[in-house]
Image 1 (cartoon, helix red, strand yellow):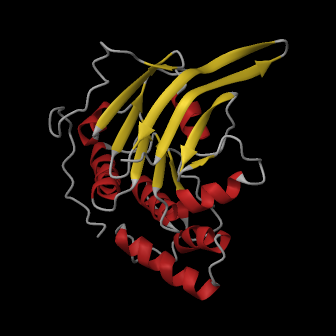
Image 2 (image 1 turned 45 degrees about the vertical axis):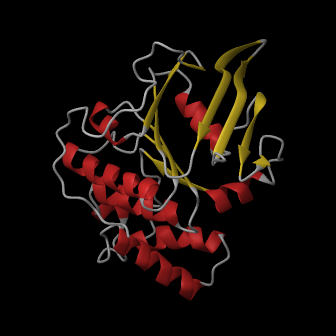
Image 3 (image 1 turned 30 degrees about the vertical axis):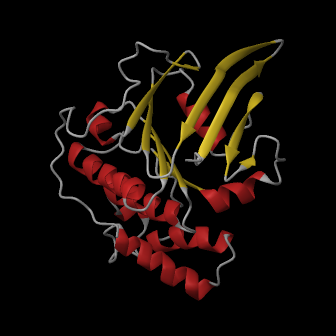
Length: 250
């Protein structure tokens, strides 16, 4: 099966005067549609850098990334936004919602960027918010939403345009255990029922049982054989305190 994202010998060095800090060292990684993959590692290990390069936010120093059978690391800065809009949805720890826009308008904005007419964008945004359990919050501003509700808006926005890849950076870090489980159930359904390739950077041990595969990064490289986090984690193997009901995104 062709991977949704294929990373080959990826490196990243941040320049600092006449020297530089190496963030990634020859990373190889495949991510498949229908898979929820988690990237774990200590702070500064390179996992967020890897996620950002995969999402066309940062550029690599060397190596390649293949997406939709296209090598994207050779694209120009002007070409990358089109790849992001077509293929990638982002979910961030800090939600990244525009405070002066309502929940509906935050989602509509993504449809606007994709060129959808205003009336159709409003309708699709309302449908997506309804799918994540916020059908009555279209006209609510972020300041009047809870952390979990903000993250649901962020997920709805990430789904605008039906991207095949969802990238999430610490999506449960700012949430309590109940809300975190609710968000992870949404992420799991996106992978398993909707066939997205879902990649999550996390330090949150409560969410590990949702992973199909856990990959550990240390010092900018994928950890080799012998790392206990390299093997797939069977559902339910790791205990957590989550108890919210399942959310149906169908």
